[in-house]
Length: 227
Image (tube, rainbow, N blue to C red; front, top):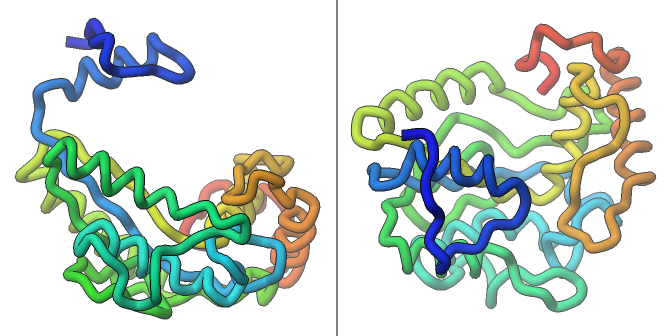
């Protein structure tokens, strides 16, 4: 079955045909939700991320999001993460969706400076340094290989996996990786801020590539090195 008649109770934003195709392949099957949490010191650069009330508090957001999803409250900080405008973390919506769906879920620690106080799968990753250092992520291959193992484990019990993440500064680091691989030639990534700081992100990525001695597209065939 590759298509489905979407019930009126479900709203679709974007390509309805694509939504019907995806839902048709998973409808009625057993799924699992995963949220990978990690830190990068890139998020502490002023102006990069709004995933916290201050740049310093962005380091608590991934752990707090995981705690909110699993325990229904935060342990690593007082209250839930908010942006500088007082808007609460999107994890509140995820928590509601998981509660309504009764879908099983797991937390994956991809490299947290502040670990969540909940059970999780540990991928052996470490908190990333600022991307401008040119070599910000350690244990890339170990994390990748453990991720493959985890995927194979989940595939034995579930028909599909919903993959999510919470990593303040993640769109900036993702931009650097995609530029290094040549996937993007300009800044097209989104932001936790309603005013996406594109110029700042582009400048930081340019500094990161220069520090690493990499030109855009140099690592098209080596994604692990790009990370």
